[in-house]
Image 1 (cartoon, rainbow, N blue to C red):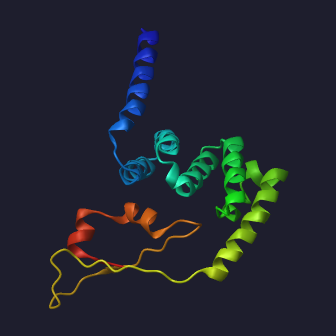
Image 2 (spheres, helix red, strand yellow; image 1 turned 90 degrees about the vertical axis):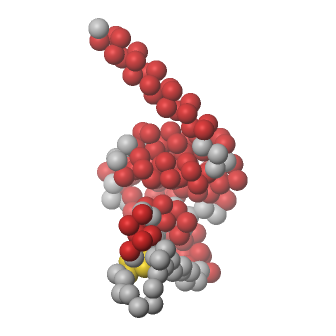
Image 3 (tube, one colour; image 1 turned 180 degrees about the vertical axis):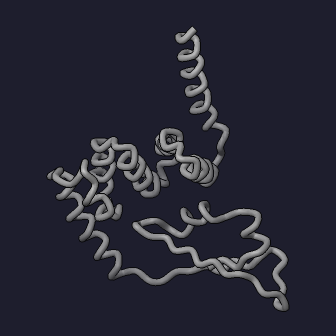
Length: 179
């Protein structure tokens, strides 16, 4: 009986990965990924971005960043190092300082070298950066009504568009001003 359960599990996993083809845009996959992340389903989130890597090469920067993050989070260190090594010559910034105290990277010479180069990339980007913001009013906004304001800050190489997925909801659209 145990072997039947294992076989069924493998079939379910393959089917769910195969169903990624029904998503017709990177943004849809990004939303799916965010849902998996919120539910701490890191392996499913990783599968989504491994699929996106094949289907959306024009989103290489976002995908490389996210896969590096997911591989580090799931302690697949060698894969994280591959992503970071791949992206750095292209000028991708990963915010590797956040991993400096992780036990798996603390004494890793390759990581230390990548983190040093990442800091240089981050510093050069900061010298070129400017503040970008967006204000979203509730759907039925009225100047005569008061609304709570939510300020959303992203960081560590993330972009505003990527962060929106994590704070968008029906309640936010109806009752809050978001900056």
